[in-house]
Length: 257
Image (cartoon, rainbow, N blue to C red; front, side):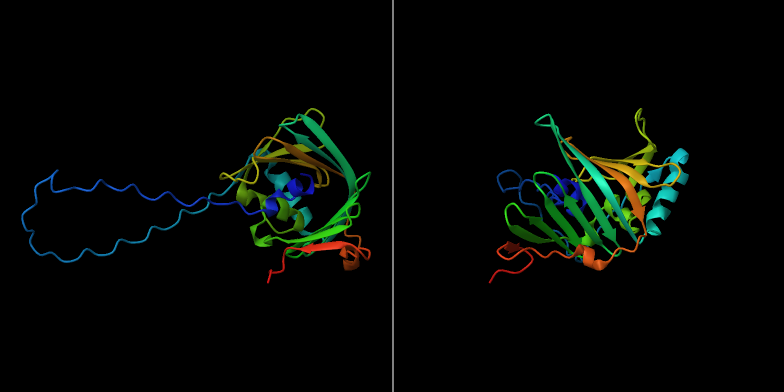
């Protein structure tokens, strides 16, 4: 539950089917006498189809409106970035925290690479509509698919695409040890993927210093971006994965025969 939670917004929410309308109890001959023959009537016109409700738009508190706009503009103008990161995943159920470190690299449009360091090195690459997970210890490479059109703005705004104000109610939070301004983002309408997103933003540069995603169960995934460098001319080759010979490849994007 590390990179999977970080990219929780990549998983489209499962919408439960609407409950069928309650049926009226049947009227039997025993319960009600047969009615007299009714005069001939014209068939009723078909009922008009109900239009789906318009999506709920988010809102931004006046005190942070300028900062949110500057942050949005910053990432819209960013073609690539590279940063070290520190990730703390707080498991609410088990009451423990797992910490990881590494580097993250991004390039428009939609190329992202996460390199995890330490005793369990791993590599995750997002390239278009595919996600690659390489585990050198297990000598395995897993390939999955993702519908980028279903990503939440909490992820796509980093790509210079999604607009946070369209999906979230944004307000200023209280944080005693924050180096920047804390923005609290609550979904404008219920989202099964997460409960809340919190962004710590540098008031001077409008860069995101720290991102926290709160899972539905209350667990928290926090990513701190360290020494972020933007528009440095990152090559597309930086997102290639060349696993050594003998690596097991599980490609779930291919249809089974």
